[in-house]
Image 1 (cartoon, rainbow, N blue to C red):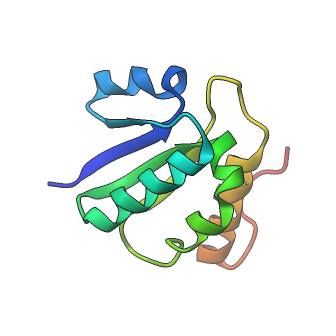
Image 2 (image 1 turned 180 degrees about the vertical axis):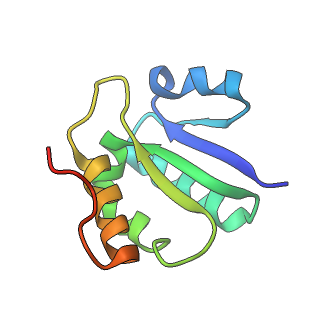
Length: 106
């Protein structure tokens, strides 16, 4: 059975442990990058969530996994809130899949 992992700063990810996620604390983007590649290459994870502030810095690294079936890498807001990066990624993925912008405009 596949796992669900989450990468981010302690305050953003610790609560996900109660949901059964595999929680991986990263104190900076370089640690988050190392964790991302380790989890992705392990073959154990179906979904890897990464907090937005690290995802912005790791955009090129995350893009390497864009066209592989597993793991799905999804950006979520951290404790500091959202800057719109995660929603822009979801919109882009939906547009690629469907061929048109189907999400509501804000």
